[in-house]
Image 1 (cartoon, rainbow, N blue to C red):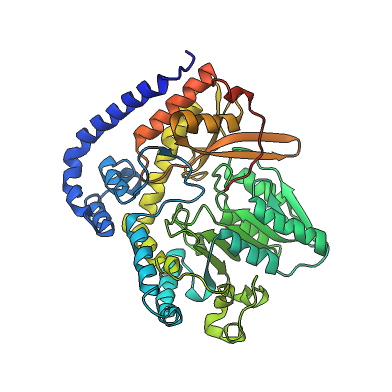
Image 2 (cartoon, helix red, strand yellow; image 1 turned 60 degrees about the vertical axis):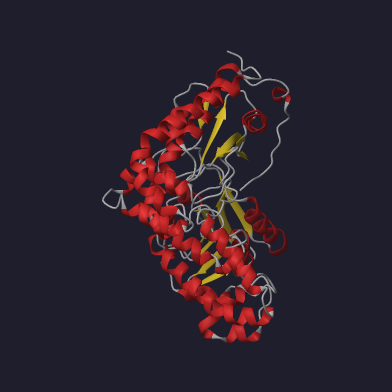
Length: 467
């Protein structure tokens, strides 16, 4: 049946009724949790988690009463269905309130005095990040985002004419641009390989890298989780294979840190860059750069650092933080984000994110007119996945979802070696109720069966990039 203009309203009413029914069904179980949240969401989450402490992370992922309480920690707009958390994630209230508190504190007196006092507090934040990441605090720098972290590495790593840097067609365009600039100016060679969507297995991904390596390969840039389809890459296997050949590995962890439960020792990489304002839920404009100790001296900072910062052996990574005056408040509030993440439990959080991805992806994957470009195997993906409808332009579908149904998504475009794929990227979050995902599936299924109305059918393809 062709979708009518008023059809979404009746469908929404039906799904909202289901949501109310489900809430009432779980209200008894949640009653013991509800008193915890109050004004301090962090303590509330800790107390709520205590009630399911005996469950495995996989079992906890299905405890809707727990996640209903976690949802209350966020102030996300409830009038839309937010499935574009891959861009940035909203901060929980405890983090937002911390930023405001630190801003007020820094404005109460001379800023220089506040900065000097904040250095020790920043060092504490860095220790908490290092503990979560599994590194030494002397190996990480707090920066503004994954782009800054990775550009620092890719511009700073020494290469000579003829050296090859290996990456894929799915790696982030801003990082690829750095390598293209160096290719043009310095004579290095950028090698990009095509990756299937989805690949058959982790073995296939390893084989792709192995076949592309040559004696001239000096650096590999690999995404821990791709921004395009949410594909998880076998970083440890790639690093081990590369190191046997004397190749250094740079990992783009923009979508992995805070989404996957891991330590850097599980990866064995030389460099790692991530945005903390994505899946760790830290304030906007915060990121982390990791450089293994033996590589720090050879990586020049993007911006000139003071002599004291370069010569102080106990603060060598601070040269990457020297970018001029900026607010300390977002960086100090990273500590609250780490505390919130730990209160939920990293593995418990990962399994919930994977569970809600599979909830919609497995359903749509069964439809004959719908392509899901992301594997639902546990080792292959977590929360991000991409989907397309046969004969429907993804730009049109993205706008149709938003303008007609208030479902916010992203759009992806991937081309190379004569192949071209386009899709809608879907990235829900801990606060996303299953009823919202059911509604999204229903809209997608209707569009797959009946098409989308004009003017959406007349869209021209638009290869906009996203992260």
